[in-house]
Image 1: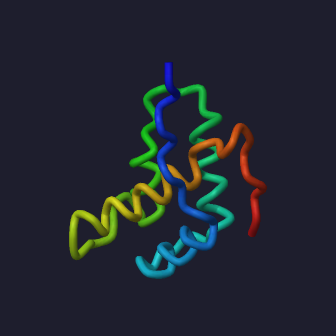
Image 2: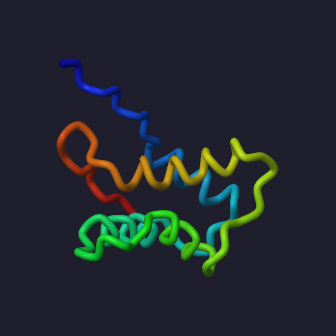
Image 3: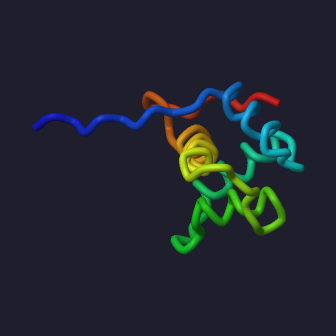
Amino acid sequence: MAKPAVPPTATDDEVRALLVRYRCPVPFHEVRTRFLGNIASPGMGVSPIKVVEGLWGGKLPEFETIDAANELVGALVMGLCVIRRGRLTPVEG
């Protein structure tokens, strides 16, 4: 049986650029830490989208299109929450 395709992940630099574009008040190293904490949380009810919303005080920034929203959320969730190639990427500040 073939393995399912692995969704593309954003690089740290791409995530940083999106955080700047949407004026995220939280620095990258803290964003990364929050997502790693979400992964390690024993609570199954902790949603990654709530972590994203929390970066902007509980409400997502405004987007011009749904594709822009998907780009940001996808980059944060897939770029910071997934294990890449069987191991976590190093945390950089």
